[in-house]
View 1 (cartoon, rainbow, N blue to C red):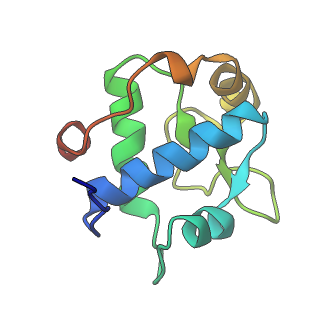
View 2 (cartoon, helix red, strand yellow):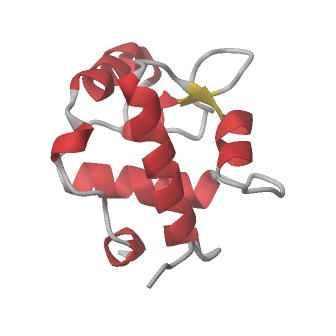
Length: 115
C-alpha cells in the first residue's frame, strides 16, 4: 500500500534527510529556501524544528551533522542557531558529511526522529 508523508515535524525531518543525502551525492550544500521549497514546507522559520530533530538523530547515532549542509544564501553557512559544531568547525563538518556513505545506512524512522 502506498503511503504518503504527513505534516508532523518528524515526517518533515525525514523528508529533509532524504533531500540532504541526495545533495551529499553531489557534494553540495543547500539553502534554507531551497530545502523548504523542495520538501514543501512553508511558514515562518519552517525548518527549525525538523532540522533540530535531524541534528539530534545524527548526534545520537555518532554521525556527522547532516544539517550542516543547510546554509544561508548570503553567508554560505548555517544560521546562527545551528549549534551541532562551532562556526569554525563547519567546513570540516561539511567535509565529514560529504565523505560519509549515507546510502550504506537505513534512513531514520519517524519514530526515531520523535525522540
